[in-house]
Image 1: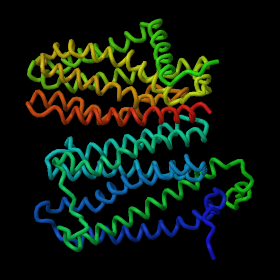
Image 2: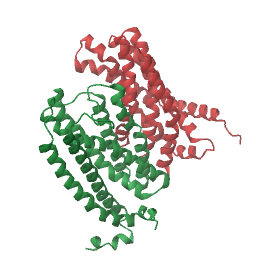
Image 3: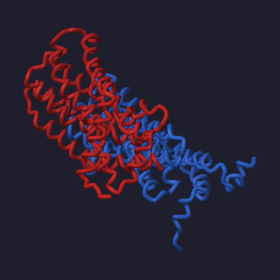
Image 4: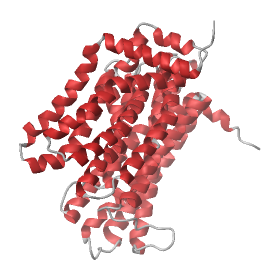
Length: 245
Length: 227
C-alpha cells in the first residue's frame, strides 16, 4: 500500500505526527549524547600534538557541519514553500533557523576555546572562521527579516528568498579551505582512509548522530509551536486535548 | 499607444530617476559627505602615522563606501512605493526586471559613481601611490555597482517595514563581504607588488553574476512585498 505523503504536508496531520516523533528523536539523541561523551572523555586516547584540548572537537565538528547543513535544509524548505506555496514548508524553514543559529554560535564558541591553547589566540581571521561567522549573520538576518514582517505569508516568502540567496554562501564556506588555504587545519575525515584513531572516530560519529537527532527533535517541537500559533483560529486546534485542558 | 522598447524603457526610467535625484540634491550630497567623513575619522581614531594609514587605506575606503551605499538604499524604492508609482510600474507590459535594472543603474549613478570619483582624493589623504589609486578607482568602478545590485534585493525585501534602515544593513552587509574582500584585496595586491588581475577578474565575475541575477530576484522580492 502506497503511503500518501501529501497527507503529511497539511499542518493539522503533521502536528500529530510530529508529536509522536519528537520523543523518539529526543530520547535517542540523549542516549547517543551520553555514549558519545563517554567515548570522547574516557575511551578516546590523548592526542600526541594537541593533548587533551582536541577533545572539544567532539562537539565542535558536529556543530559546524550541522550549522552548514541545516542552512541548506532550511533554504530547501524555503524554496519548497516559495514554489509550491505549502505552508508547512515555510513553517519548517522558520523552525530550523534558531537551531542552525545556535549551532553556528556553538561552533564559533568551541572553536575559540580550542584556538586559545592551539593557536594562542581566541580568534584569528581565517577563511573558515570568517565564513562561519558570516553564516551566523545570515541566520540572524533570516530570523530578523521574518520577525519584522507582521503578515506571516509575506514574512515566509520574503525570508525564503533571502535564505535562497544566502545559500550561495554555504558552498563558499565549504570550498574556502581549498581556495584561501590558511591557518585552519585541513579536513581529517576523508572518504578514503583517515588520520584519526578509531575511538576518536567512533566518538565523533556518535556525537554527530546525537547532534543530528537533537536538531530534528527541537525543530519538530518548534514547528509544532509555530503550527499552533498560526492555526490558533482553526477548529482542529480547539478540539485538541492539550488545548482543551 | 505605442509600446516602449526595452532600451527605451531603460533610458526613460534612468532619466526620470536622475531628474528626481537632481531635484533633491541634498540626499545625494549627504551620502557623499558621510563617505568623506567616515574615511576622515579613521586617522583621528587610530593616530596619524603615515605607514599604518597607507596600509589601512584600501580597507578603510572600501568599508566606508560599503556603509555609504547602505545609507542610500532606503531611497531606492521607498519614495515610489509611498506615492504609488511603484504599483503602476508593476503593471507595465514590459519586464519588471528591466525596470528594476534601470532603477539600480540610476541609483548607482547617483550614489555609487560620486564615491568612485571622490575616492582618489581621500586616497591622497592616506598617502596612497598613484598606481594604487588607479587600482582603487578600477576596483570601486567594478564593485560599487554590485553593492547597489545586492542592496536592491535587500531594499525590495524590506520595503515599507518598520526599522527598515537597520534591517536592510543586517541583510545586505554579509552578502557584500566577497566584494569587500576582493575590492580591498586588489589595492593591497598592487601595494605589495603581486598580481592585481586575479582580484579584478573575480570582481568582474561577481559583477556579471549580479547583473544577471539581481534584477530578476529584486523584481521577485518587489512582487512579494507589494502583494
